[in-house]
Image 1 (cartoon, rainbow, N blue to C red):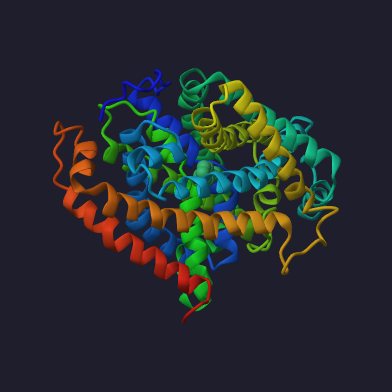
Image 2: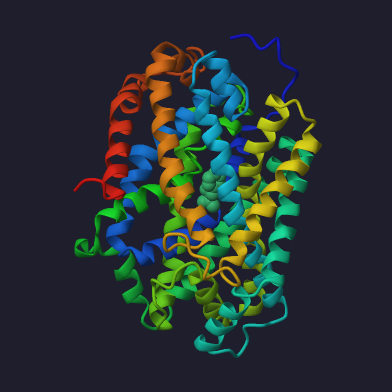
Length: 453
Ligand code: PHE
């Protein structure tokens, strides 16, 4: 497929850069903030097991399908479908992705803002000498406020927009390459401290010993949603990033590396959190505040806790930033390529619009906490609709597109780099995207929504 009609697009400069940026998108608050609390609310070990099945049996093929579409079309999430399937309604998948991007960024920036508040608290030595109760209380007071949470959210959105404004190679790629490995090292250090706390074993039992009596049907959907959210699949982020991947990159290997890295970090986050949850007698089903309550407790008990706490919240904020950047990029690439806006204009408009929506998510913990719609706050709706509905639905349509519309010849061409790599797995991949993945996701979806069963 010739690309002579396109202006020269920005792209990732190196293979390491691709893995760093894509892993930067995947690894974020989804692993360190969302995974532990969602696992905590849904039974621990049994949840983990279902989650792992979804990541490798479904998440990985969907990731590969998105890379295939993006690199083939060299366009944004919506334009890719328009280019590959002109005049067909497949581009609606891209539109759904843009809506999902708005919702995700709106609630994600709330939590990302919290990481900045906690960075400041850590710098001021704010955890020192406090009991578990006091740390819980100060989190609740902060979270239910208005001014500070909203301010930090806006600061975070500004940082995200700044990196996007700088472009793909000099923005996204440059920062993620250095900072992601540092985050892993730090998490391992904190894991060691958490594991040496008295009572740590109960936490490991909770995380690794499946108790299937705790599994209700909707847990299947929640695990699927968490897998999709954590891998950044189902909304076109990886189509967009795929479009910046150079032609000689081995897509299956990249997708496998990224899925594995993402999963290892989620499990490490669990190992960091749950021993401490049990050691400090915190409720594992504490909800979105879990990480922000547990971690200060660990730092308080840790030699060098002051230093490590600052470093941790810096890195957590950065992990969040490399994810928010990838979500905003979906919208900005769409605005600039399809609506003919300049990149800077697209960045400002998208970031401003999302920030306004995001304020409502942030205030859901405070002044709007009683503004329930069918029992959920605005924050909870954004989270639920995006992760558990839009991403799985997007994932189904994406694999169907690759399996039934794009077809084996195009897929083989793309996955084997036009015949340069061995493409033995292509037939297996086609069976997965045509049949196994769509059927499995649809079943998990229907069961999880409680429509049958
Ligand atoms: N995967 C990111 C995380 O785990 C969140 C994300 C979801 C990013 C969807 C992009 C698209 O934090």
